[in-house]
Structures are given as C-alpha cells and as structure tokens.
Image (cartoon, rainbow, N blue to C red; front, top):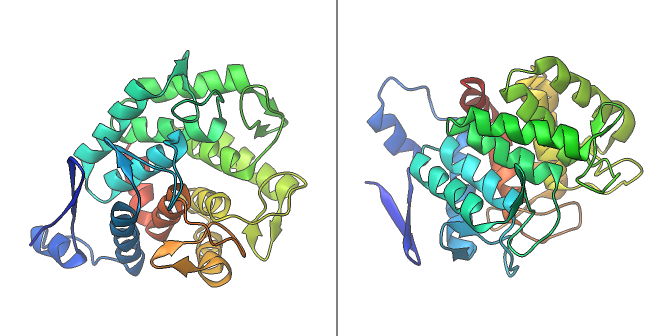
Length: 280
C-alpha cells in the first residue's frame, strides 16, 4: 500500500522498494542506495518544517533556501514524485526574487549564487524546461564568471567552492557540454583537492562537508568515474556518518541540513540520478 505522509496542507507519497517492484514487474532490482535514498526522503519529510511546497534548510533551522529546495525537488523527481518536484519549482520561481534569469539564494536574501542557480537549472532540465536551464547557465557565465576553468561562487564573489563548481559542471553535462564538465572536474581535482578522500570546500579551505563531496561524487559518476564516486560515498558514510537516517553536515559537524542529505541521497542512487539527467 502507498504510504501517505501528511505535512500541513501537503501530502507526500513515498513508495517502498517492494511497491515499486510490484508496480513494474520488469523493473530492475531496487539497489541498496535507492533504499537509503528513500529512507532519507522520508526522514526529511518527517523532520523538516515546510512553508507551502518549500522545505526549510535544516533541523531547528529556519530559512527557505534555493539550493536546498532545488536539490530536494530533484530528489523527489528521481524517486518518482514528479508532481511534487514541479510544485517545488513553481514555488521557487514565484516566491524567491530574481535578477534576470538568476534567482536569489533564499527568500529575503540578496545573494546570487552559482550552486543555487545551477541546482535550479538541473531541476528545470528534468522537468522539461531546457530553455530555462540554458538561460540560467548563460547568465552564470556572463554575470558570475570564471577563474581559469573554475566558476566563481556568485555575483560579486571571487571564491571558488567545489560544490558550486560540481553543480555547475553537472548542469553543463546535462545540457550536453560534457567537455566543459570534464574540464571543471579536472580543475576541482587539481586546484581544490582532497583530504581523507573527501573533496575540500574551496581553494585553500580544508573543511570537509557532505554537500561538497556528494555533488563532486555525483559529477564523477556521470562522467564515468564510478569507482571514485563509490569511494566518496563510502567515505561520507564512514567518516561523516548519520544521525537518525539523515547524513551529518561534515566531519565533526552534526548539524542536519536538507541540502546535505538530499545531495547524498542522489549520490547513493547515482545510476538512477544519471538516468534522470541523461535523458535531457
């Protein structure tokens, strides 16, 4: 039976692996990673607060952030909740202010960040709005810019975070620009680097966060580096760990954020995520 999880005025439908198999007898066996991703989605729905269709940034954290909602929407889509993904995208575009084709980082915010808008571009792609995604990508290129092959953090920022670059590279990949995606991947490896087999936050910043490594791991996977992606996933599990089915924010950082767990869930079922991205 389908499990309905009410949350305010919304109803989320989460399907168990057994229900998926019964609904589609010829489907592939549900992977361990997909089971984990579904557990994460269900935990996010139970533990986080919602405002309409938008999910708040974390446990005991207020704020409706673009990146958290876009990645959460992508997770909903990948797990078959396509209407919910569309509702999230609609609320993002209607409720968060924009400048041109770039949307600000949160409701009430002023920043125009690469990671947030790249995440929205990915969500638009899977929902069939390729033109909208291309406009976002083009404005990131023109308004944010690069330092070598690495894209900057956002408008007015010269920082070069790994998560922003990984998500921008994933958007390039999804829109068919695989050569550029690989160039960015190689620059992340060469200029930002790793510690404990997890990607660092940014150039000269040694912090190790789930979101950064999950985004880079997913980039590795779609570019064909499956072994490296699997090692990153394993190191997140081993070195960062979980609290009550949600992945911790980073090493020795036990905060629980929507964006971190959603990104890790997409990495956990990387093959399914790749299939969703590749069809566009």
